[in-house]
Length: 253
Image (cartoon, rainbow, N blue to C red; front, side, top):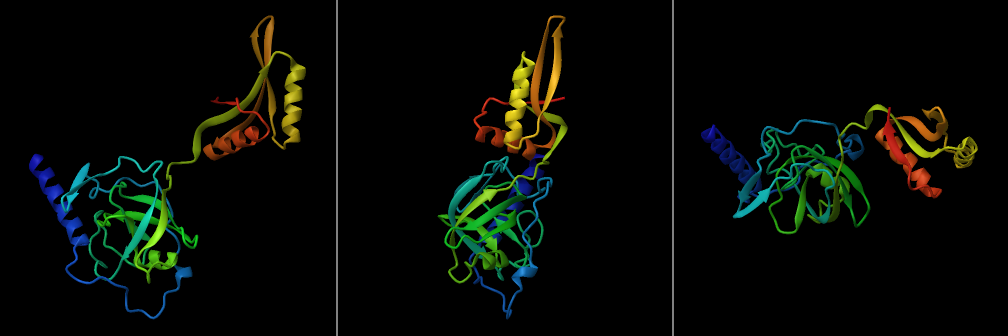
């Protein structure tokens, strides 16, 4: 198993080196025009990690890179570059052939694959690409875009551009169980109705749930829901915060 692992890492590094070599000149394809509107952004979807291209670490040109275990929360600004004809058809670090006419990219440390939004900070153009390769191994550059992706951001002529790269979540937005946002719990039913009325004025639908504590005590919960998506929960919390309610609680049935 150790020999196999060594062979795997050596093969991976060899593939990365071949993709970052400078033995021949890279450039744009010899085509008259490309209909960019006919090439959609990559569509983020939940995928397993690639069998290749995701070692814990690897070394290129004497520098060691540590591959991130997760892309969650990744956001960075820096220079974007692009690669084209020199690598077209060659295997990427994830094993699939590089296609300069697809919305893909290379990154040094994000897990493969990762979907990212790239914004050109000079013209505010933005794209979504699938990171399936390693690179660029040049100081100050944070992402290497496919030719067509760079064309969409308008950085082909300049060779590089100032960008912001943000990883996109591919986790499911659905909740496993019906979820509620509890705005308040009152022993006085009238107070519960006043809260419900205040929410209605803010166009927030709510319900009052009566809960029996014991023979002498009961409470009235004012809650919003049921909600089936994480985004919906966050939207409700934002709406409540906008009217001064910051201590709402989230719970599932």
